[in-house]
Every structure is written in structure tokens, then in C-alpha cells.
Length: 170
Image 1 (cartoon, rainbow, N blue to C red):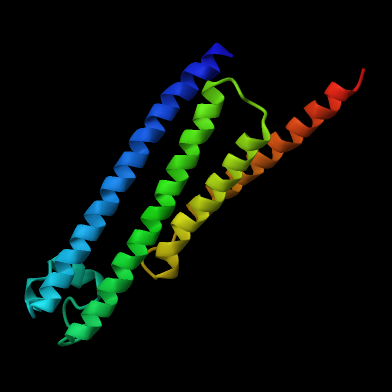
Image 2 (cartoon, helix red, strand yellow):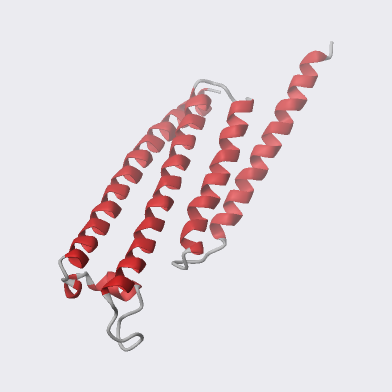
């Protein structure tokens, strides 16, 4: 039990750093979005960083002479999706921190821990699905891990229920 508490305390600290890092990344996403918006508002489309234009598909002769409105719409979609994705990353990190906090206190088989694990799985799916829905990336690996986390939460919940039933038997 002492090892579980020690490792959970370390993971709780790691989760706090993860939350702070996710918030900082959200600030970076907002700053880059504001920078691109400034370039659009001041008609300095040529000043938009090359990586952003490449993301939009305007590199080479794929689409000739993009309009300011088209670039603005694509950047809004890109940065809006990034913000939503970051929000789910923060929610996932907060749930991990709460789960590790409970484990560090010695609360192993509780309904609250099962709920935290299920929410981690749901937020992980949403965190991965947002970029996929926006056509930015596609991978099935996060869905596999989220399903695995969901399954573990189910097994943990069933074990908790069995333990409660066993406590009633004299």
C-alpha cells in the first residue's frame, strides 16, 4: 500500500505539471491565432507563417491565390479546433490529478475512482476526435487506449461491487 501511495503522489505531481503545460499550450495556440488574425486584418496575408499556409493547402500550385476570407475561415477552423482539443487535454489532466490524489490517500476501490477513469476515457476520445473531425489528423491509437481505460474502469467497478457484497456476508 505504501508503494501505491508513493507512486500515486508522484503521478499526482506529474498531473499538475501536465495541467500547467496544457494551459501554457492553450495560451500559445491563442497567441498564434491572434497573430494570424492580425495579419489578416492588416491585409498582410503574405506575412502569415509558412507552416500555417502549408497547412491550409496553399503551398505550390494546389490552389492559386487564396482569398483573405478563405484563409480566415481555415485559420478559424484550425485554431478553434486546437482550442477545443486543448480544453479536453486540460480536462483529462485534471481528472488524472484527481484520480492520483485519491490513490495517494489510499482510496483504491471507490466509485469516485471508477468515475474518474471513465471520464478520462471519454475526454481522451474527445481530445483525439476533435482534430480528426476537422480533418487535421487521423489515428486510431488513442481510441484503443481510451477503450482500454474504459474497460479497466468497468473491471474496477465490478470488483468494487463484489467487495461491497462480500462485506455484507457474515
